[in-house]
Image (cartoon, rainbow, N blue to C red):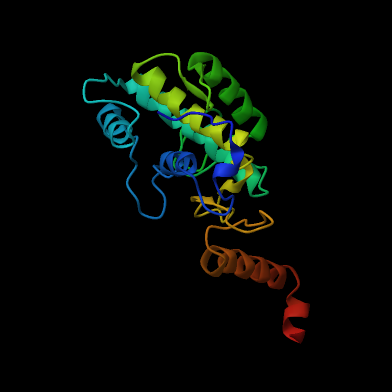
Length: 217
């Protein structure tokens, strides 16, 4: 079960820990880059939660649970975009709080408020031993599964790694990724692909805004 460990020196900040993998797997369930929406309905959400180790075969997942999963995902994506320096918020393919559907956006304030509500709905309990302290979901079932995701976020924050979990700033992408740079400055999942696309769009926009300048080039 995901937990917060007190010894922060156990992991290099330049390689993603298990908690980061879990959060990124969750946010990357969106239908981006031709991928299938993996939280489309109750059966799909149940499959993903079981595959992630957050639920077992007998866990009942409803359509309301699937919608709640998409809303939680949207809020996390917005925060991950903020980590990458994008504060407009939102991600394609989400029907999250304030989003309303594909291409809908969520402000950072809305996302943070949603995550605070989620923390109250899916509480965590500390498990204290002589060796460490872990936060574990206080409930079972789907609330426990969502709590497990929040525990992963808490673990990353406790280890000083939460800011390294980001979403690509390239609007057609917004893929979740782990920033492996030493100064935590990455803004795109792939500088050669998404970074180059953004640079090209910016260049074309400048040329369109200044035809005379473009002619002089």
